[in-house]
Amino acid sequence: MIRTNLSTRPFYNERVVSTWLLLFLLVVVVATVFNITRVLQYSRNDTEAGLQASRDEARAAELRRSAARVRTTIDPKQIAFASAEARQANDLIDRRTFSWTDLFNRFETTLPDEVRITSVRPKIERGQFQLTITLVARGVEDISQFMERLEKSGAFPEVGGAIEEHVNEQGQIVANVAVVYLPMSGHAAGRSPSVGRR
Image (tube, rainbow, N blue to C red):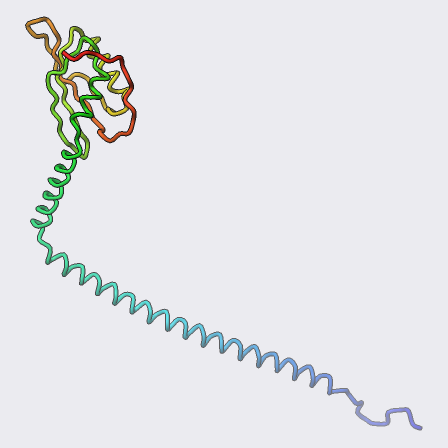
C-alpha cells in the first residue's frame, strides 16, 4: 500500500472553508432580512403616528373654531346679569341663615357688667357676616374686656379695634367696634359669668 502523495499539487480540504462561508452567508442573509423587516415596521409606525398627529391637529383646530363660535354667541351683559342675580340669591340665603337669637345669646355670655350694646349693624361681605357694634361703657378697659371675651368665644374670629370712640354727656365712652361673626362656627361659646341686661 502506497502512503505517499504522488500528486504534483497538494490536496486542500475545501469542504470546511465552504461550510464556514455558507454559514457566514446565512447569518448575513438573516440579519439583512431582520433589518429590512424592522425598517418597514418603523416606517409603518412613523406613518401611523404622522396620520394620528394630523387627525389630532385637525380636531384641535375644529374645537378652537367651535369655542370661538360659542364665545361670539354669549352676551357679556347676560353673564353679568346672571352673576348679579346669583350674588343677590346668595346674600338672601345668608340673611336667611342669620340667627339674631344666637347672636344675642353669645353677647349675653360675653358682655361685662359695665358695658351696654346700643346697636348692631350686620353686613354680608365676601360670604362673611361683618358686624358693627355700638357700645356704651364706663371705661376703655370694659370695652377691651368685652372684645377679649368675643375672641375667646370662637364665633368671632376677627375682632377689630374701635372704629370710632367718643365721650357722651354722661361721661361714658361710646365706641363702634367691627367684628367678623361666624354663626355656624360650631365652637362652644366661652361661658362668662351671666350678667343682667340693662
